[in-house]
Image: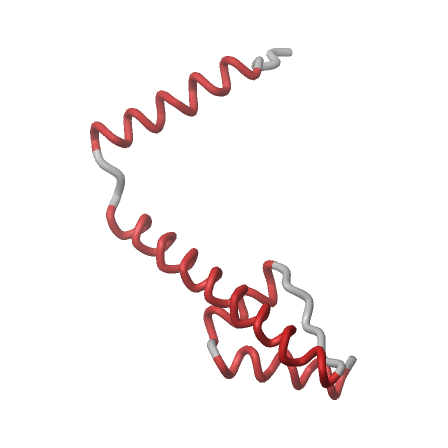
Length: 90
């Protein structure tokens, strides 16, 4: 049984990063990851402000990966659907 030490894992990760810097990362997957990350952050911010405003009405939508992705990818309609699910189903 071969167990890699932490030092070996770090060396492998650094060598992969250097290799990607030299060769160049594929453009389309990196663009997709970047856009999804930006949308995820926007979703978290929208949920944060919704929770601040909704606190006076007793509305609280938890901020987790699923709710942030729904809000970030679907925008206002995703946030409205989460509010509707919270009010009418839960």
